[in-house]
Image (cartoon, rainbow, N blue to C red):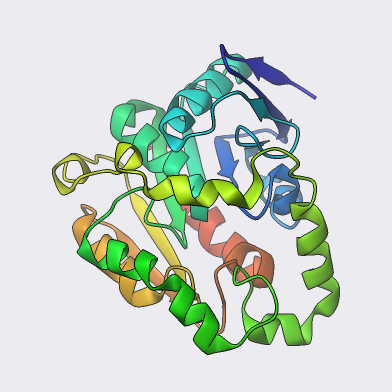
Amino acid sequence: MPEVQRADASIHYEVYGDGPALVLAHGAGGNRLSWWQQIPILSRTHRVLAFDHRGFGRSTCEDFHPRHFADDLTAVLDTAGIERTALVCQSMGGWSGLPFALRKPERVSCLVLACTPGGYANDEVLASAASVGERIEAAGIDHTPALGADFVRRRPDLRFLYDRIGELNTGVGLSAVSKLFDPAARISADELETLQVPVLMLSGSDDLLFPPATLRSVARDVPGARFEEIRGAGHSIYFEMPDRFNALVGKFAAGHADG
């Protein structure tokens, strides 16, 4: 498996297919294997790259902090010979994609932010993050809040698979989530106003971690953002409703491949 050696980290990635580039950035509950329902489909029309964030999957690091994510992504793209790409970011992955798009818009054809504010922290996002524990307790669930309750009831087999994929993260794991809201990882409204790439924001109607109202507030502040709420999905649309997710992402990426 290809890897990029940085001063304090080793970042592993895989590439599939041919065509315009499309990069998948996973959330804190997963790793590159989380995209098993996306890679076989999207690689029919794109050159798909999936990587493990530092401290996740096979990637290692000495210092875990999202402030490193954009530079990690730059190193991966440079090593893989990708000059310009669509970025598809799930939850924590948004902390890679949005900062990268702000710093290097010429290298991003479009950006998909799935169930994530991507490091942008307006008042609604901060208030929602502070109350996430209350929402989970009120829901009375006995499983990861990254999956919708209805999905877990219908597909215990896939809940099992989701949990097992997450167990492969033997580095920082879910304890890293707290650092996502470190002030050093936040994007300001002034920074967000400079964003120059097309953005599709996806939200699950039953998402306990970043509810639709929270992400709608982000979309209002993202220049020209398109917002889609997926009814019946929880925090992990890509995992719970892969056909819907793949169709939306594939069409959006194809529409901006030459943009």
